[in-house]
Length: 164
Image (cartoon, rainbow, N blue to C red):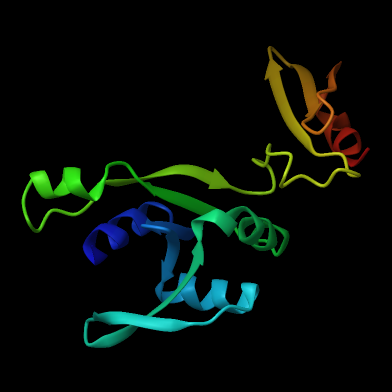
């Protein structure tokens, strides 16, 4: 199981990894230390790796959204790794088979779309800029209200446009 965790974590080194273990999302190593401090939850340990205790913390799946919001507001990126099969299915492949897991969501301030995670009294914009043959264009959507705005935007005006 820890080999699988390390492999998935290596693919997302800049994010805290919420690793699904039954009814909990668990974090290990430096992710656990950072999350435990940011969330004010207990830091414990789970087994050893290379002769050292593995720091571990966890949050219940049913309460994960609130913890995600706290982490995002504190500047963290979070990769949510889910179990993609039932443990019984994994056992069919052999007694030592590990439940297949995949990162299904990367949560950042720019990817929040869930009403429960967005601040109701704030605009929450998603912005895109492109240039084609020297002509620039910008589009922004307020994911809180659904309002979409599109405008011509030469590159020199991009900074002031984003500052609005």
